[in-house]
Image (cartoon, rainbow, N blue to C red; front, side, top):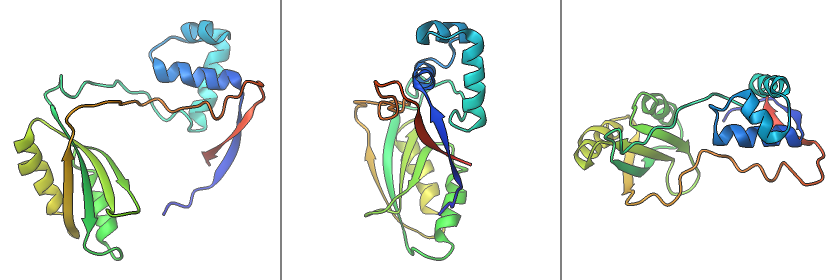
Length: 177
């Protein structure tokens, strides 16, 4: 498990509003964001730089439509390793990173050791290419997959209401140091 050092960072209502605005449209200019949250473009720029330097803002991305890009099958797969100790976990993690169809992979507690979100062009590609690659990774004992029929909700926006309270006071958040 990662043992990271954490520092506290104070976020005020403007920081929270700025983060909410950027989550909705990271392509917006500092001027546009400033108009939304009632700050000047230069103040927005300074705050963004601070949030980037602390790691709260990790990166900016373009979110693509998987189906429009020919990746019409999505699966949630649950992987169980043959052993909990030894090299199986780190070996699995190293190899899974190299499979581009695996969008997310989480080490979990419970019935499975890992949960993954996978995309593929069709069921044949999912089965023959992706899942077969994963089964060949040393230490993989079992893969159980559920095919997504319909996406009810998909979001990249983190809920920030627990930080921004109506009283306007600055709130501490924990950041990796």
